[in-house]
Length: 77
Image 1 (cartoon, rainbow, N blue to C red):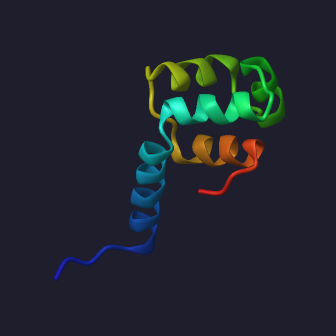
Image 2: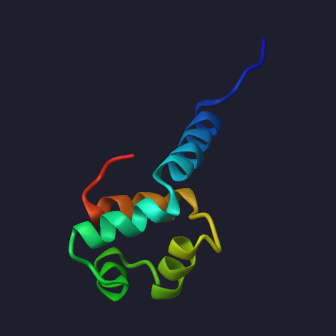
């Protein structure tokens, strides 16, 4: 039997959520909510460059960044 701590499972869940949410989906949600990249940056506190990199697929957001963006966009992970 393999044992995983809750923190490991939570981290895996957040990473899986990031993949399921997808970089394009973040962009779609942003547009649907009426935010420019700059506007989302302002309301979320996530840097404009980070949002650009996430949406372009250049990077996968860290779990905390994903949570912050989801909160700013009014969605739950």
